[in-house]
Amino acid sequence: MEKTILITGGLGFIGSALVYHFNKLGRKDIVICDRFRKGDKWKNIRDLLVKDIVDPDEVFNYLAKKPVKTIYHLGACSDTREVDMDFLYRNNFLFSKKLFELALEKNVNFIYASSAATYGNEETCFSENKALDRLAPINQYGFSKQLFDKWVFDHLGLWREKIKRDSPLILAGVKFFNVFGPQEYHKGRMASVVYHGFKQAKEEGTIRLFRSYRPAIKDGEQKRDFVYIKDVCRALAFIEENPFLNQRRLIEDELFIYNLGSGKAHSFNELAGAVFKAMEISPKVSYIPMEKELIPRYQYFTKAEMNWTRDLTYLRKDDYLEQAVRDYVRNYLMKENFYFSHYAQDEYA
Image (cartoon, rainbow, N blue to C red; front, side, top):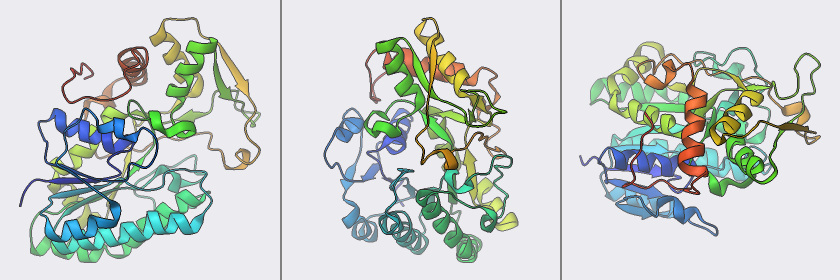
């Protein structure tokens, strides 16, 4: 079989960054499944190398005819404020289900985007081992992702039998935590605090953060697991490069979902401080009211439990957040260099 990789959502933030990562590894055998629509998403792949681009309406016909080794299913509606549940059900569940079934039929590795949003208001245990039926998403987006996770779990038996009978075959769901970095510029309000904070600091000299509505937590001390897009891509590639690690988990423990964060929790104040430090300007933060509908759904703490990628060096860096923010700010945002390029030198290690 050819080593072709198909990436759904390949024009988006994580998808196009993954194309860049594989280009840097010397791989050009990449097919993108996505729609350009209006806007500037086309710029995400302008300087990247791809084999083909397929419309989502045609992808199943494409897969029926063309050999593919691995599907990275990253395409979905990722707006956590989307309230049209029928739309989310079609895009995030039904499409994913059909793609899973075809991957199983064609012996294709299937690595897909779940979401940390499935943890809901959980603020104490972000464990990959936590039973899916004990998770309670608090928005429609998280629920749509949870539906598919549970459906995959109910069909693990088919995948495990396939592994035992045939060949190494990867099945993995990945729960992204707070990802930031180049290629996110088209995301508007859904772009990271680093991106928006840099713009605010540059234009106004201050970064605006949400107030805290819990007396025990000071303004800006809400914490998140922030992870850099370059390390997310390393981890996604790590899954494909280590099929037997994945299969052992599937067969022995029925585990197929991996958290993907930094394994650390940092406050928004720390994040803002890292931005100011990278810009070499004095820090100034103001705290703004949170939208009323967001207050009851807001998480004050996230931290990915990371057990599967301890060989990845970024997880061992004490100053991880500072280094990642520095790379993003100095090598991209300050240079108004908003997009990855396969021929550009990358000094981030």
